[in-house]
Length: 376
Ligand SMILES: *Cc1c(COP(=O)(O)O)cnc(C)c1O
Image (cartoon, rainbow, N blue to C red; front, side, top):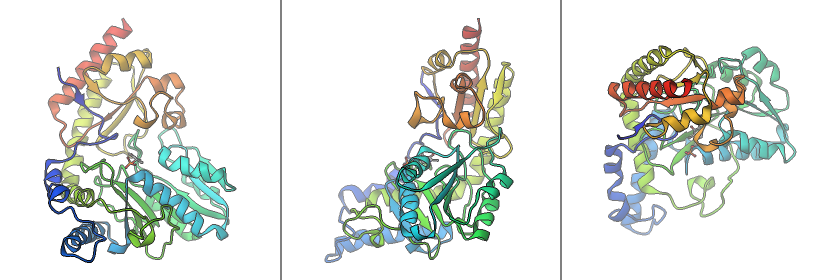
């Protein structure tokens, strides 16, 4: 039997329309967009310009505010290290949440090892940060705050507009890792008070290896990759034209179907949850209300996590924690107050554009079978 893929928070399949849009740029229109001395190069540059302005328009910014990177990880690194380097005279304090992706936590910890002071705020049992606690943690010497829009493990949506307002009041720069929200909400980062916003192609049915950092007007970051002056000197390296075209196409498709998709997948998610709750001893990790429609993360009582995932993995592609940190217990679930054993016995379901009701019913059956076996 084929494996049912329910791990769309780890990555998504590249949409055939995206593959088609990229196709001419591999072998036919292959020129380097920095080659301004011939027509082939100028055509490649025009394709990049078009993709950039279309993406920028969707995000409500000017084209020069979009910096292409290799993905959200690089965008986070450029945002965090780049802003801190550009503004280091302003202070030494950095603030983030315990549930952030490691692509945010690690650059911040790197800076903490180089003379900066890092506060990692806990979250509540539902995954949301307490706004009073957040506000109290802001200091006069706070240089940068980084809070993700939507969590990759539990899908929980932070109150980013309120967080943005608090930061703006104090004149503190705010970065957000938007890898999970982008394509699932019509997000205009600057209207939310965000100064820096990271996004990724492969989470929105686009290609892997491409993403972008969106900078609010007037926000300056120091380049973290020096080279041939591409991307306004902010990110050296030959531009991957096919990937950029693919990212734009994927973003365009997502902007067209996000609402219907979130609604449909939200319905399937509820059907999945109802089926799992009937099995008994199943609890939702994180707020169900403040959550992306296509995510479910549950904790299963009375089974060993390793045995549970071993029983599931032949028929179900799901995740126990974050794909990048598999092996060690999820720091996100730990931040919600779960013990290592409870975190290990948790399942993340990430529904996606191709997910069908039949697959959801199949997933419930597979879990039911595993529990029957393991609970004896
Ligand atoms: C996937 C993901 C990343 C990493 O993105 P890449 O484009 O693979 O570097 C970072 N943050 C979050 C929240 C993610 O979901």
